[in-house]
Length: 147
Image 1 (cartoon, rainbow, N blue to C red):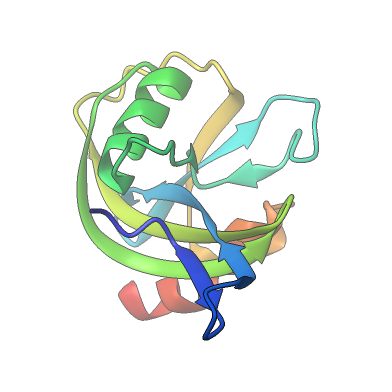
Image 2: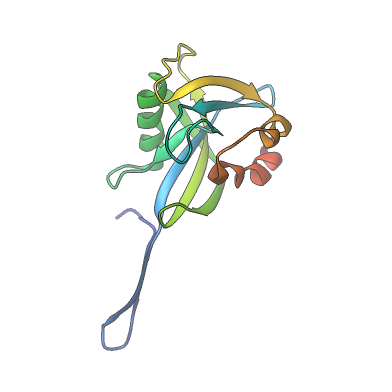
């Protein structure tokens, strides 16, 4: 059985006292010459026109790696290879979420932008100056140790 982030608390008589389910999200971090791949979201919604590390929600039947491969196919039309876990953070968005960031490598740079208007390679210093998604900003301290 896979750990889905659920925590249950039971009393002695078996009554459920508390239930905390952490939903999971993933981000794919591609690195080239100490620069990170970022993309700017299309207008609309809470994260519209903000920069981000591409990724998204992990579905119930998916591993983190499967979710990243699906998200990159859906958002960029490319395949990625998922590598090591680089950073993780907890954030609030419609409840508590766990964000895990993995290194990815691209099978191709022939992107079809579906959920984004543009992409670029950026240093951490450049990223800190951009209008970046709040949850992804929480990954920056750990990424400084990776680069």
